[in-house]
Image (cartoon, rainbow, N blue to C red; front, top):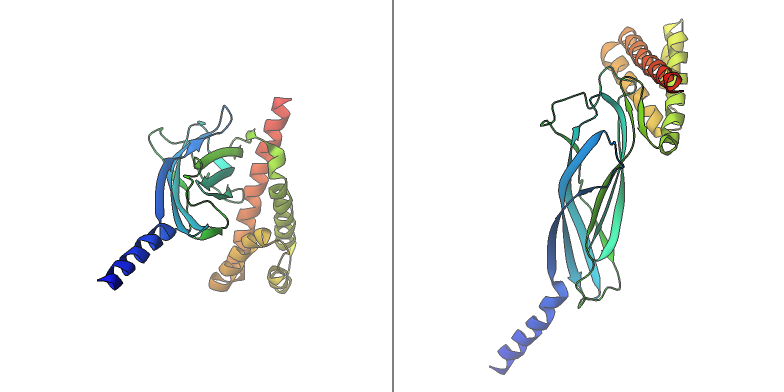
Amino acid sequence: MVLRTATLALLCLALPSFAQTVITVPVTDASAPGSPLQVSGTITFTDQLSGNAVVSSSKYELTATNVSGKGIVFMLVRFRESGSRGGGTLHNIQRDNFFGNEAIAPEIAPEKTFVLDRSNGGFQTLCCVNPLESGRDPVAEVSIIYSEFADGSTYGDKSAAADIFATRSLIIERLSQLDAAKVDETFVRLLAQKLESLEADAILQTVRLVQKTGGTEAARAQVRRDLGNATRHLAAMQAATAKSK
């Protein structure tokens, strides 16, 4: 009887050390006025306490509606999330169809939404927390930082997309070189040369796949399409900039 009582007492002492809290909160759209997207969603924070440490994870889905009345070609979105025990993550969400023929978010009816982003798992461990404190209010804020439209106009902070512009320049330069290659052997050799930027090389990887499955002529056609779409978008942006001056 004494042994059983002692075991129960130890179990009661251990349970708080492994307490789990689950909190679900709505996502706040903190975008500046005139944002082309209306974003909503929820995020669920799960904290597992163990002594003075906590293992934290989150699960979320962001949905958006294009309210700009224009097709969106590129968008840069930031989502900041942090649970009640601190830590947190800043997500940089990019959707880019600058080299494509269609808008990622075409002009659609207000009731239509699309999935902007969702969690991909993972957790983080935070040390030295007070298990007796309830913690702070969770944070879940999303902001549309910059976007480009099919008519060449833009929204937001263009300087925030400086890295994107640099990447595009690398891609356009290589696509132009491929398009100018007169001999197939030169085209294939140039296509095989990877760009240092992984983001820039992703477009070329698509062309490599086309070349592998459909042949060099199909890859050349893909290069012409990508380059043509980029040229068209650039021309629209230049015209919109000139018009705004």
